[in-house]
Amino acid sequence: MGPANIFELAQRAMSAQTVRMNAAASNMANAGSASATEEGAYRPLRPVFAEELGAVESLRGVSVQAVRRAEVAPTRMHQPGHPLADENGDVWISPVDETEEMVEMLEASRQYRNMVEALSTAKQLMLETMRMK
Image (cartoon, rainbow, N blue to C red; front, side, top):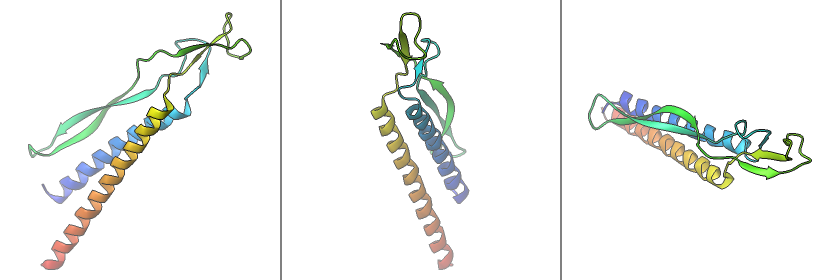
């Protein structure tokens, strides 16, 4: 595995973690949002990742295949005074679990930081190798 492959692999992993973190941030921003209809209620975003094989069989990377809406039903709440309430006085609240999203953001952030540290180590090793010559 050459230097270009290491940096390309890290770039793909960091991009995937960025998509993961952005999806969680979007979910957090829409937590508790209300809608007049069940269909219009916000549903959490979930990135779908795919494994990629490199030129070398042991070199595997990751890519974002899609970002999809989770198949979770919104919560129906009776709030007759809400401006979006329907004729029954109900609104539909997004089914975002804020704790789950926070854990997702922390995990994505840690994985991103791990890749930054791996890149830093690879860079240091390359510099040390160049100094030896």
